[in-house]
Every structure is written in C-alpha cells, then in structure tokens.
Image (cartoon, rainbow, N blue to C red):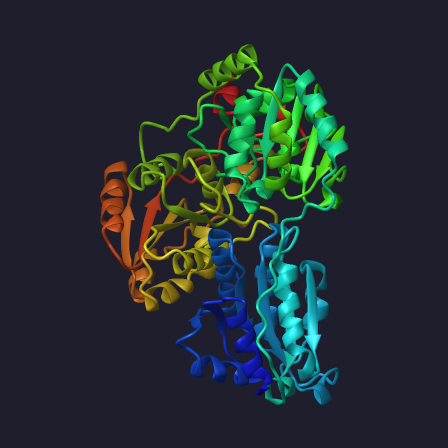
Length: 558
C-alpha cells in the first residue's frame, strides 16, 4: 500500500513493537506528529518539558525494560537538545533510537531556519546515524536502526529525516522484525579452555562485574559462576544488580568510592575475572598498580575493550550470558574457603556504616531501601548522592539502578525516572538527586505530574555542589569556587507549583515521616532533605592513587 513518509515512521515503530515514544514537536517534524495523533491508540507519546528530558526518558525506559527506547525532536535546537542524552546512552551502551526531522532537501546546507547537521554533530556519540533524503529508503533505514541499536554492544542510533520525505509517498509492506541473536561468533573454545586453566590454578580468584553483565541480563549465570569457583564478587557502578547486593559473596563496589574490602581484596587477589566491564579510570585509580598481584581475564562483547585500559592475560569475546553458559559446564566445584574467610573478615573490619545522628545521605538511602523492601527502581543524578545510593541501596537485579556512569550527566535521573515509570507501571520509582542536579532538569516534574506518575524525587539538599566541594575541600585548599548554592530557592514551593507534593525534612524523624507519605501517594512527591554542606562520601581514593590506598574520615584524622 502507498503511505507517506510520516505514516511509514509510525508503521515501522509499530512493527518494532514500540508502545511509547518521548519527545517534543516542532515545525520540521509536524507531519510525524500529525500521524502520532491519528495513531495514539497504538503508540503513546509522552510530551516532556525539554528535549533533553525526552532523551533521558527513552534511556531510562530502555535500561529498565531491556527494550529499545525511542525519542523524537524537531530540527535545529530541538535536535541539538537531544545530544546530551544521546551521548549519555552511548557511554553506557543503552539501545535508544532518536528520530529527528530536518528542513527539506533543497534547503539543506543553506543555513535555513532551524537547520543543523545533527548527523554530523552526533557522529562521535552514536553507534550509527542516518540522514534520509529518499522516502523509498525510509522503512529499511528505520528497521536497520533498531537492529543496530539492539545488536552486540547496544547503543544509540539517530535517524534524521528531511521534512519533504515525511510528506512524500511510496509503497510500504509490513515486515516482521528480525530476531537479534546474542553475539557468539567470536567465542572461541580455545579462549574458554585458557580461562578454565587459569581459574583452576588460582587460589585467590575475584570476580568483578560491570555494566555488560547487566545489559546481558546474566545475573543467574554470574551467581552460578561465583558459587562454582567459590570466589568473592565486587562490581562497578554500572554493574549494580548483576550480582545481588545481599549475596554473601558480595564485597561492595570497586574503585574511587568503593569499599575498602573490595579495593584491598582486588589488590591482593591472584586472578581477577572481569565480566562485562571496561576498566574505567574511576575503577582503576593508578592503572600501573591495579590488581598488580593478579592475572586478568576479561570477558566482553566488544573486542575494542580488550587491552584498552588494562593489559590482560586472557580474554573471551562474546555476549556475557552466552560466554558464562559455555564456561560454567567446563568448571568443577572449587573450594577457596580460606580466601573467602579472609574477604569476609575484611568486610567485617571495614563495614559501610550509617551515621547514627542527624539526617545524612547514607541514612536517607538506607531508609529508602528499607521502606521499599529493596524492590524499587532507583534512578540518580550525578554526585555524592549517586555514590551514597550505590553504597547503601542493595541492588538485587539488573535494570534496578539507572544512573549515568560514563558521561556523568547531571540532570539525567529525573527524565530517566519518567521513562522507568512508564515502562514499569505499578513499580515504585525513586530519583535520588542533589540540589545542584535538580536545578538542571527540574522542569520534568511537570511531565511526571501531567502523566500522574508516582515518582518520588529525593533531593539531598546540602546547598552546595557536593562532590565538587568535597574535592575542593580535600585537594584544593578549601577554595570553594562557585560551588555554593545557598540562595534561598524553595524546592517544596517549586514542586507544588508544578503540581507535585512537596515535603521538607531536616531530621531523621521528619525524613521518615515524609518517606511514609511518599510511599502512600500515587502522584509525584518531592522530598527536600536538608543535609550538611560538608558531608562526604567515604571511602575515597585520591585521583591517580592505587585503590589499595583508599581512605576515610578516620584515616584523615589519624
């Protein structure tokens, strides 16, 4: 049948089983929005307050559901406002398809109104991107974009469509989406055999899980693997939930704000098995001293990550779930009880404790964990509150923590919480923010209110840019350059103005009362939790130092 380009966009989205798109209309994309209006019974459109919010919402939807997230924007500033969200998804390997529309083909390259080369701009931060100037190629391009976004190491793909293409007509035929198999073509038996030999020789193995294990939804395989080789497990920020935070082998996060137990354990193990992690600088500390007593096995779907930041002794390339499925049957049950006892002793010696007095970030996170029975979807912004969340909420499944790890995007969490709430109806969603981050995209509270989403926004309000201030305090001689936010902004009044419930907490009891109200409320709630300006995230590793040199407040006093 003959359809317009705009109709083909909608039909192709329906082909791909897309039920929700996030976006903001404008002149160049009006034909597509007209078709969305006609098809609102098939595809739900969530109008965000800003295009960046749409890209983060698509990201949060994708991370929490495992599906492809879709966002839309018009040409020029609409398209460029998506870029931060696209880059965020790129750094954390999130499958997102961003659809933009541009000026007509005759106006391209002539500095036309709201014209920008969005394909050129996003080339470094997309897995692939397209500009469609011929309506006969539109359907195939959209189908290819979804395939690229989902396959192998996932990532964002941008499709820029000229406005005349959305109006032009061509024949369209429905196509069933192509099944995307897990990446197995580079899994070699010889690589698995090498890994088995190294694991069997090890006396002090350690498993380090990252975001790749979450993306692969390989939690069951990671647990079986850890039990089989009798090894402790640590994770990266992006790896939260790949191994349960309540598991008896779990030693906590690794790296700059990781636990002392994990940092000291990895520094003394004789074999480090890295499962789906790219060895970020925030994990390594000083790469020259990282796991210097150990041989390293790296398992990753992307061969470009092998030997990029750390030179490894062996590697297995392929989807994490599939690799572990092939590795586990070749291993015998092992016994490393002395090593496990040593790691449990370290965990008991260096526990993550919550301050008893006053309202603090760790207290708030632990109370949220208790109130939700550890079952909520948690999104975060970026900073101290993000690290406290990673340290004090025990994540037990993939897709439970949504946070910007690679790009470190302030303003990510609120949009992501909207996407998570849309994709997981009935599930309680919390966004943990700092007051500096909340200012970035707080207009999305209006989006949550308009859609009656039961999101709880918890602002760790210390009236400063907390993490930057922590660095200024420790490494910059207490010169607090442009990090003080004590300007009298009333976040409760802002929340109320946007239709949400605003609650303020200055003490542990007030926070408990506010949390109780939030848990019983089925509309957006903002809790303004007032904490100390000089509260810090402990432990910490100074930039460029070995992770074994992690320190906390007691070490500083000593």
